[in-house]
Image 1 (cartoon, rainbow, N blue to C red):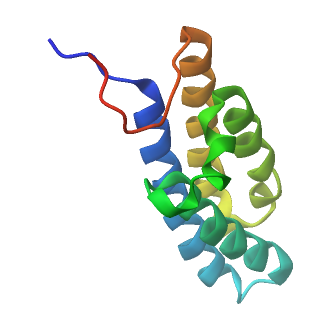
Image 2 (cartoon, rainbow, N blue to C red):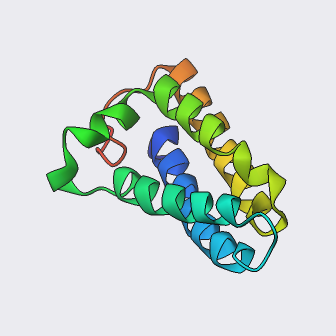
Length: 118
């Protein structure tokens, strides 16, 4: 059976959370707390390229090569999204991604998300 890295799964879950943030933010524009909706759209738009395997963002992606920092960042950015109903699902998905990043950091995984592991 092939080996897999949990960092890959955490990045994929994080990318799904970014899409949920953008969609929930668009729906949240019609609620009272529009600033949370705008925040979630911005966070989703900024995090997605950092989690997606783009080569030209090399120095910026170094944050997510350290899985402890990635876990703290994902968990910290999700807090405000719990205060608006359309963005709650995205916040939960971001927290799941943070937990998976933390587990992969505890296991001692290193490197880029989508490196092949032998």
